[in-house]
Amino acid sequence: MADADIGGAGAVYVGIESTYGTPNDPAAAGVGAWVPVLNESIAYTEPNRYYSEQIRQEAIHFDVKQSYYHVEGEITMEVDGRFLPYFLYPSRHTVTKSGTGPYTYSAVPSKKGSTYPGGSAKGISIGVIRNNVGFLYTGCVVNQYAFTLENGIGRVTMSILGLKEQPFDASLATPTWFAPALFGADAHELYVDAAGTAPGFATADTTFNGYTFTANHNGEPQNRLNRDRSATYVKYGITEVSYDTEQDFTSRTEYDNFVAANKRALRFEAIIPGGSGGTWGAATSGYRINVYNTVYNTYEVGLSGMGDLVMARINGRGIGITGGSGYKIECISPTNIT
Amino acid sequence: MGYKIEADFEQAEKGAIIGIGFGLAVENGGSVEVDDETAALFKEETGKTVHEYFQKSKTIKVTTVASKEKGGDD
Image (cartoon, rainbow over all chains, first blue to last red; front, side, top):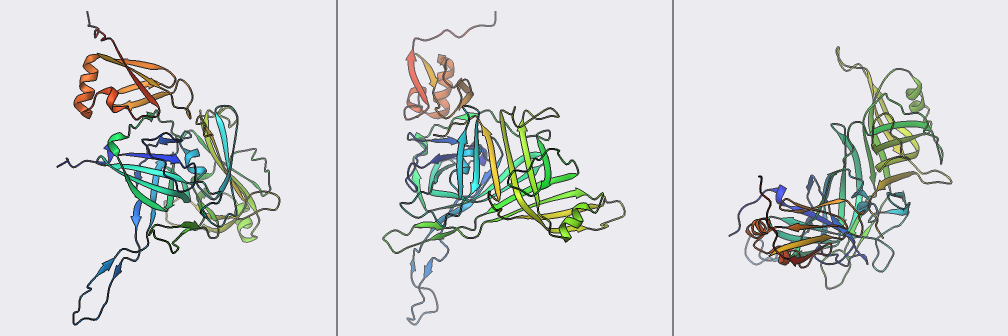
């Protein structure tokens, strides 16, 4: 019998599939990398396992059959420019790459309705080694991104939907690891500007505390009649874009913008090297999230306590914009995905 | 018998340090030689020789080389 083991000895592989749904095995040649994550919960998910209620002079279920299944779960990791591009392609985004190294990846939302078989969807295979046992999840896409800051460190939680699960031989996998390049407390800035397809974002606003950006594509697995219980494709719903932050309340300006539903633009930017002289143009690694057309959904200002700062708790919502994209996720990365 | 470990990870920049586990690292596009003692520790840990372990790897190539004497402190 094998020893019990802890999570730290595990490993997660992410491989871009040459054809959506075709496994990219960690032990085979393919475009992919071992990604250092903080946690994962990717799982075989069978929502409606069938328990027969045959009436046969008994009061207990008398048979069980497997039903449709799909793959579902989350991956949380510290944002690292080296690995983020692997998670941008398999999503409801159009991704472009520029530069000669480091490369800049730009992901803008698309209106694609599904990852229909034979279509143009890109997917990833996610291999997970748990106590030396290999699980391989295929046809996976990122349904939701939640970028946030944890003690000043950039972090992202990605909600994954996938088609199929199968084993892989973990003993044949040979994980390799790069040195981490995390975005620390000196990496981040936030900019607010008037809404537009190309705001200047000239001056950082230093009155914000914390930031979480969420893009949810409301995907749902679809199972169709064939001799395979796994999901056939992922159907997308409405793209919902939002952000949450706090701001020192020093004037009515943004409150008035909230009341008037005035459109604003917001940029979150994180770079390496950071510090006061750091710029996106000189960064060796970075990520930024531009929301070009946004309104404050809620803007709460209260006197929460005698010793508390007077702060505005803000929830903003991103919407589309004529002649441009509602938002864009950009990443400067040493990784060359071809 | 020692081993020469070479790394060629197409998606990464040359010179990036790649940890290959068990306290070993190699530059992308470069190589590192593993002495007998380290190779023995590797086998103890994995149950396989360095060559066997990386046999299926798409980024790491291993060749056998003549044994190297491990350097002393004096």
